[in-house]
Image (cartoon, rainbow, N blue to C red; front, side, top):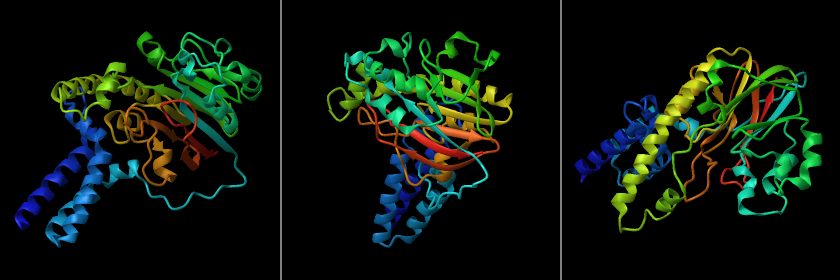
Length: 351
């Protein structure tokens, strides 16, 4: 019994470490580590439950093995579930900037709903200084969307500077914005999904990069596959389909994340990178974008694990607010508001 427990602990620890550091492996070369990193929250929970059971049966050597693996995995686990017990104190001599990032799922106009959209209502109620929206109104402007029309006057008054329509990503700002013209973003295949603006914000100019990395290639049929994974019939075929989609998605993320990193390398000053990464903390895309200089607002001041995607029984944090420069994050939170399949992220910075 003792040896079996020890073997189980060793295997569990290996899987945990493989998942925790799988994001360091380029998916173009090997995709399995990226898939393991996507499953890291579940793997970590299993390891903790196993740890408790081993402790209950006084298998201390096996307990020590799993504890060691958890400690070695902490640099990645803290990105998923930080334990910041307090927030930094605000400096009264500095200005604060509130930002909001939200995947709006095209404000659900495709459902034929004409009621005022709850997602837009939430955005306006938050009164953030800068709002980065993803999965916005491609080929449509706000004026063309019936669920938005009742709030247009308030929207235009609150956010006189904005960009929407014809792009997947957009921005709403209280302060003047200037589109960033860069060869890095000039490629047609990227221009809909990565945009940057220089914002004349309090505390000095701020570059805002809004991203919506490609989804993990799940169509409506694929999400039905996910919903039915617990059914025995045809499970192997469904699993193979999902794995193929994941592989294609991770490889697409690699190219898009390297594009963002290339832009960050030629950008100076304060920078915010916000949006729907469609990838989790610690993933290859996340590590590529963060590099050695970007910080994660949730990891710095948040507490505990959260998820921002909540559809089709998938609960993962794939939306992020990253930052660097001469500014400090004071607070970060996830709200459960709106009509989208994503929950919004809000952060307050001091500059």
